[in-house]
Image 1 (cartoon, rainbow, N blue to C red):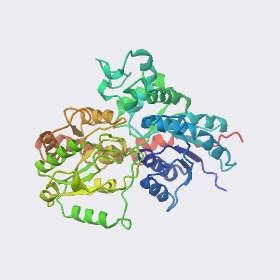
Image 2: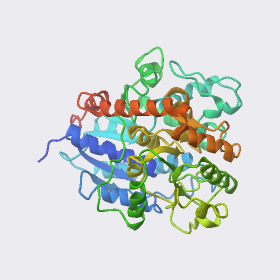
Image 3: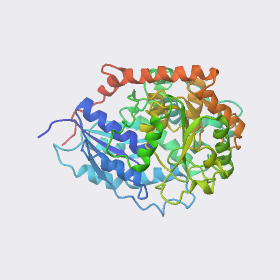
Image 4: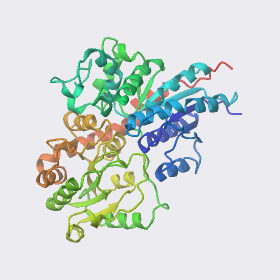
Length: 477
């Protein structure tokens, strides 16, 4: 019988959570000789999540246990925010997860427990089993710093964070502008804020924090976690940068007719000549903003592939949905746009294989909502970005990418506060695609691509960080 260390990973619903968890599992299996069981609560309406879970078992590299989604209708109101829904869901699923874990008998019982951001209340199950327990954060180190430090800010800052006149200072880190705070911090009276503070307060109960970034990308912030006088004294546990964890390019066989036609078109375009526009599985914009986006693309005279969703005034409207349904682009794009641009661009409804797209040599730019998964997929393929933050921690990501890493451009005002006009959009597209003053951005992202590959290589910083994760069987059987 196998004596390999066995990791149990608890994952909350959502593609943005599931994708990096699956890649973490692969890394543990291939680099650390772990066996892995993922306990997932798939969104019942998400076809993409179901397909990802199926792919994890064909061919099988880990076990998947799907926990039934708990009924939380009596725990949250009809207008509850996404963070509230996820936090309550993962709290209510805890008894089922505990039963499933404890039902695994030695010697097959897990020897290490890993939970995601919304599942920190399940860390105590690791204590019951007497095994090491970690939190996995599928975001960047600056987000982690804010999340760890929010319990201090909660006591020090009076009034709403967004009304502050000075940036929020975090020891050893770049300050956070009030307008960049994460969604749960927008309203301190909302339940999602209380859930967010609780999550950050639970981190010291772990034996360490795994994070989807790498040393060279955010070394100053990671250094702050190692210093007891700075964030180390607040987090109280080590932080392990083990990224970038990204989906691999899919090779042949699975492409449908739509994808085949898309890549056949891309194959005919010059190198780095096409901008890829996609605001993620949950990203929607208003009708007025979509009109300006279309005109901006047309005016830029650049080749493009645009993944479109029907317009909406709710930027996270698609978070718990499958993205299926009516998506006739001609009904909400400017009249004649599809005809006028048919020789230079493609409009694709709802979804494309993003990693395959970003890895194609014809792609030269990515107009993105800058979710962290999309961000590192872009960086690891050496593709500069237009960042268009919509929700969650994306405003924080956008500032990091433009002001600290220098691999992106952004609009002068947040898209959620004001419609960004076609002339500004035209200028951003041309800057990262063809203008001379965008050369530094294009060069910097290619440097970071090499940095990411080095971190993951044997003896690289992320490879070494993952090797420090304890997998010893310490269970008190």
